[in-house]
Amino acid sequence: MTGLLIEYVMPGSIADELEVVAGDRLVAINEQPLRDLIDYSYYTASEEEMVLEVEKTNGELWELEVERHAGESLGLTFSAPAPARCSNNCLFCFVHQLPKGLRKPLYVKDEDYRLSFLNGNYVTLANLKASELSRIIEQRLSPLYISVHATNPELREHLLGKPRIPRIMEQLRRLAAARIVLQTQVVLCPGLNDGEELQRTVTELAELYPAVQSVAVVPLGLTDHRQNLPPLVPVDREYARKFVTVWQPYAESLRKKLRQPFLFLADEFFLKADLPFPPLREYGDFPQIENGVGMVPLFLREAGQVLRRIRQIGTFRVTIVTGVSSYDFVREFLVQLADRSGLDIVPLAVENKLFGPSITVSGLVTGNDIVAAVAGKSVGACLLVPDVMLKEGEGLFLDNVSLGELQQRIGSPVCVFDSTPAGCYRALRSFSKSVSGQVRA
Image (cartoon, rainbow, N blue to C red; front, side, top):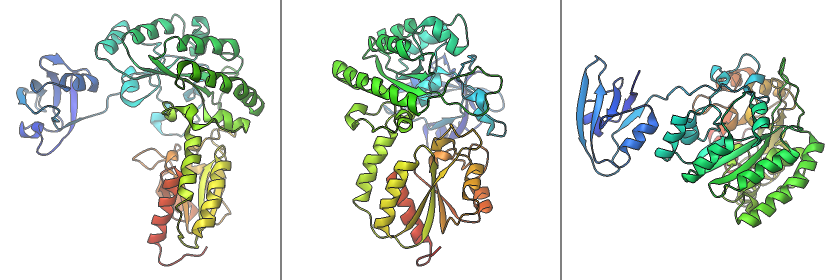
């Protein structure tokens, strides 16, 4: 079906005055058919006069003339489009390693350049059509987030599990020539795309700077559910230590050469290696923060800032859950927070029983694993859960356990907090106001 399904019309908006309603479909603007939200944004970006073609819920076609001030919104919200599906068969694909019983959308593999532009999703471009590449250039869809993994064509085909895919460097050169900003990543698979192959990948991507703004190297994630999948070598402590000692100095040398941080190692490497993080200057403006690069250094900086302004809160006891990999630095912050606030704070590392012990990040902790972790323990007046463990806006863990169910099963109140030091402090102060007096465990 063509056009965009209208989900909501803002009261008092231009669209509302034109009697457009939810359920109508916006088909075209100035005779330009609309394929998706990007077309809508593109064709309404600067036009002050336009003609909208709207298909009403009864099938009638309306042509509506619009005059507006520059930048004035039409007042339309559209249903989210279904993402294009991924046809790759990546050796390290995390979706292929998921157990049964999770939220259904988690089993969907998307490979959609539109979501890369709109939401920052990483895409390989291996499924990109020539017409789509031309559209990216024509409409200046920038920045894009590209999963490169390797620039060696044969190795890349092996990693993606797909033959005869477009040459990634040819695609990137064309995008770079069109001044499309590119943030890239490499999922590191020991013995496959590390060593000389990683050197080749980083070198070739650096040649496209400043169009290619960054390269993040992140370790592959391996769950306990890799039945009938190719064997892969995990990144363990020894490997991480060797990797960091070689590649972090190289990243710093690239920063000096390019005069801007370019190569970034994921926080997980430093956590696994038990090595100190680079100075904050090595992260620039944190272009790969959503890729797990620089989150811990930022946490540590903010923790110091928060601790300098802590006030007494109370004397009640709370438990705060975290992932295994973040436990040490979170615990250090919480010990000092408890000392300065008067609270009895118990940090609790939750082992990932669903995915397996090698998965240690907080974002993949499940509701059932939290229940198992607190079994037989007194959590005190409240259990605090970082929001990164939940689906935004729905309050569901990966295994479909809701906050209400978790609260019922552990028999204690559950509070969700913004997973930052300041967010934790705010949540504790807010909870203290909700209890009458001081609650003792």
